[in-house]
Image (cartoon, rainbow over all chains, first blue to last red; front, side, top):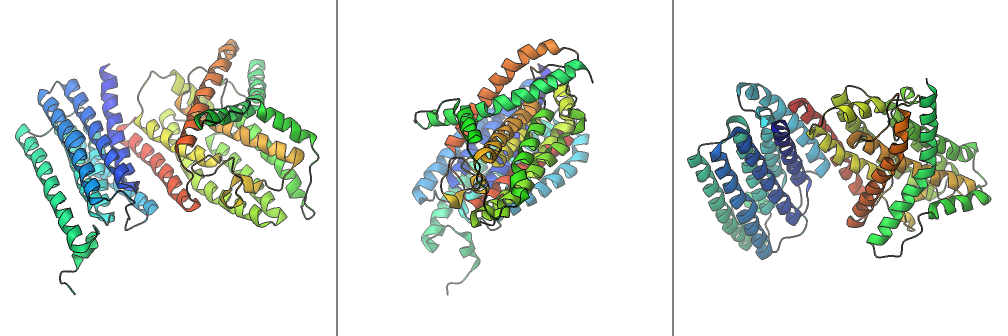
Length: 219
Length: 315
């Protein structure tokens, strides 16, 4: 039973990576939000299993915190945001999707190699998944770079936080509670600020394309 | 080579030849049910094959010998492929002849011949179909190889029979790498078998055809052989999937009596697989041809990630 639980953590880690790739290749904002919700749910499951296997009670709290913020509150906020901004259609990417995926594979190879020596220092039972967590962070970075519109960039930012959270769980069984509460609160506030920011961008430029922000002066 | 091995080999080829049109018929029937249509009979494929075999086959005036021989080569390749893939038993004398890599080569061989035959006549639709087929083929092959390599890395063998044996006998372990490989394999087999997101098997619109455009000039017994070969290809792909991801319930070396149980298990697995295929086909819309490279790049990427995850997690 114990062995299966540890294997299932590995499986959840793999699913996280799969969802990161799914988000990278997704064109529709609505599906992007669904994938993000799913990623949050996988993270909750993974954290809860780690908590059960290692008997670390504070991880249950952080799993619950993730459930409330990443799976319930933020997706609802995002849904309302895209409803009010009325942006459900295709997202345009700066690089075409197959190229993005190939770059993604290279990033995964890089992350796995980078994490190998670090993971060996850790005594956690799930230390080998650190590479996957790092790969998720880098893939979210890539998503933020390759997307031209503001909403997918925000989702990329949030998904990067998912990756970081998983990295903390994998390497050291989570961060101290105070830090976790702080981050969760930061993410929520950041979400509100970015929401307001997006309305401002659209009012100013009639579009959510952040390339408009590159010109500093009005012609 | 033992007598029981020879028997299971022959039985397997026979079962493949008989069951393959049934699988295609079952997928069509499920699809019709899901789309609220009255379903065609399960035996429709057999009746169509019989009808086509009785018809005279008409060949274009400028057709070369290649055009006439291609259906036989394609049919032979697919029969050989379904003889190599373990379906009922892992005691197959033919299986050392070709491992997983050679099997992919066998599919490629058939594809080259059917494409050449389509271009041979010189009609616009033939060469259009041939070019699209080659485009899909050259993108799908590396992904399929990577899927097979993921399974080979776990079992330390590229022979499909020993992969099946090792996976079926090992105590149950969750392999994240096989989960990736499974998703990738589903995408590849949809593309390779001319199924909905990539190609529509029931289309009558020439501009969107891929597989149908290739065989537009064939008639009579040639067409029958090609249709049968297409069914066999679907059967072989389903069996590769079953071997890699659900290898339980096959007969083994030295116990031919298990063959009795293996056949109903295989039929059950194929029935479930066919229903899932019909569900996928109904739920997804056909994509533009220029989206296909993206679709197959995703499959390739997933398979590569599966291998990388295997190296990272050791599972």
